[in-house]
View 1 (cartoon, helix red, strand yellow):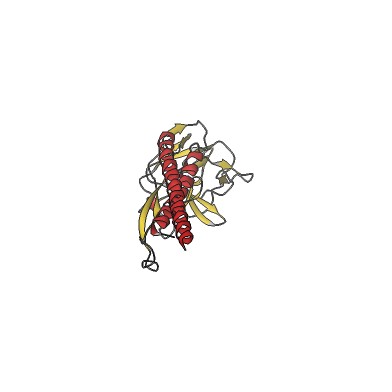
View 2 (cartoon, rainbow, N blue to C red; view 1 turned 90 degrees about the vertical axis):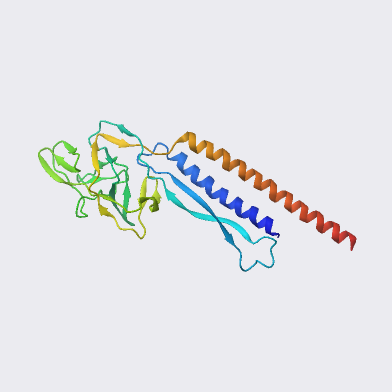
Length: 240
């Protein structure tokens, strides 16, 4: 296979990755706290096959970065819905470890423990879950959780030195690999509201059109290259 065919195939593989990312973003347009991602592309030299290929450069995955821009905050009027204003993230305890989110659509378990949508405990300061007593539950601007006149705890809100390196775990939930979370001192809580997804449908559809056209062009290029190779092979074999 010629170097030009390798380049076209690597470019096709890159477009498939982009289509997957765009599909995930569009599917989560309505997910509270969801953050889109951006991908980069890089050139990769083929040292092993440099002598054999006509061109020894491929297109490869250049890494992803989280788009940390804040989404619009919408009022819900629900006392257990909270949005963060600032760089902070809520901390969720899962079987796989701590996860981070800006989706503040919380609820109460049967034991009156504060939980996320999937039932995972929401961490309070000190890493402990928050259990509230009887009475009307509310969450104040400083993250304190109250049941009537009794404070049950305070939400753990953390931030990161470089949040763009956080990786998607599941919808609006993120994981931090090799980066420590520190308590946030510049984040405020807005009760009765939720932060919306920061994905713009119009932007993603425009990007989807561009990626799809590039995919189709590469498919045609590969077909033409293969037909050219086959044609030359038949011609040469026929002469012999």
